[in-house]
Amino acid sequence: MKEKIIKNDDYYLWIKDIKTRILNAQIKASISVNSTLIELYWNIGKEIVLKQSQSNWGSSIIDELSKELHHDFPEIKGFSRRNIYAIRQWYLFYSQRFENVPQVVAQIPWGHNRLIVSKIKSIDEALFYSQTTIKNGWSRNILNLQIESRLFERKGKALTNFPETLPKLQSDLAQETLKDPYNFDFLELGKEAQEREIEKELTKRIADFLLELGKGFAFIGHQFKIEISKTDYFVDLLFYHLDLRCYIVIELKAGKFKPEYAGKLNFYLSAVDSQIKKESDNPSIGLILCKKKDKIEAEYSIRDIKKPIGISNFTLTNAIPENLQTKLPTIDELENELSRHLEE
Image (cartoon, rainbow, N blue to C red; front, side):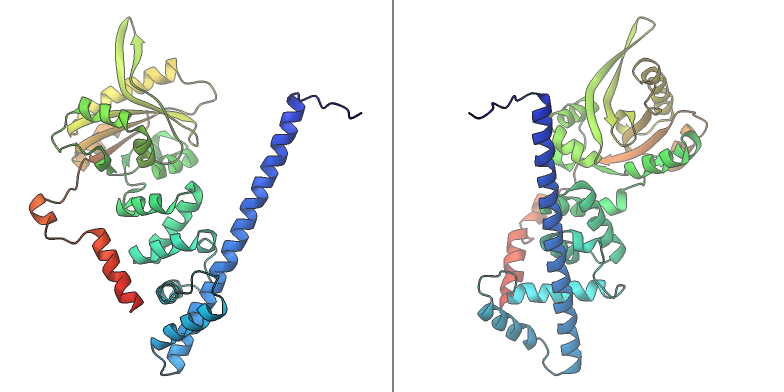
């Protein structure tokens, strides 16, 4: 008679550990397969460029190679004329700097690689999106969204007093965490929207808001009440950042930045640090989000404040005027036209 297994905590922990190891093995295998494929594409691209430079074959080599590979490997996708042309362009892009496929590039899927090279002109920017994709586990759609929102240009650009108010490592990480400007186009609000309307829509679209804020932000609440000397005060938006290990207080302003905003935020940070922050937490960080700011005025406002504060702009819409929309081709039209030319 078989002995009955007692499914206690030890049993479930053991099963969970095994499942975790299997998952990790699957991920490693997937990365290994992807790296092998990317390396193969690199060598194919390199050899195409070499053959074209040493012979008079020109672009016909891509047509012939596609036919040969389709014939011998009909079950393998990725050898269409269009994809082989993309492999050649991808190789030419990175071979300007690297002799072999860059390690970071080999860790993301081919579809991500194609997207990056089709939209980015700078190798440094392309490597940034590759590294950030790995760090955040972005799908191709999310990667495309981040490229279109110009994340590379905005990341780490907030005006702050972090070097004077935080230890070096914390300061560098906090600076890299913030952006300027923040893109709230997903709200689909007009430029004249007021603070409460923007705040309400941000909390309704919290998934999109968290994506724009970046990895590590955990939403605590909006209009978060703090009682000080029997008076209630309300923080616009309160977050906790898992990597920075601190609370982040966000004040939202629908107009131009004013110096008094920094003083009010400094007051809120003192209250959060006194009433909410735990001993193991790092000092809370404040962020003022406004429609626009004068840089010198903003610098003066936070220069002598002892609490860490950043100031960034936000944008609500970059919509194309309706009278121009009808004259421009859609994305689908452009992609279909490009596909038609590549397959010809």
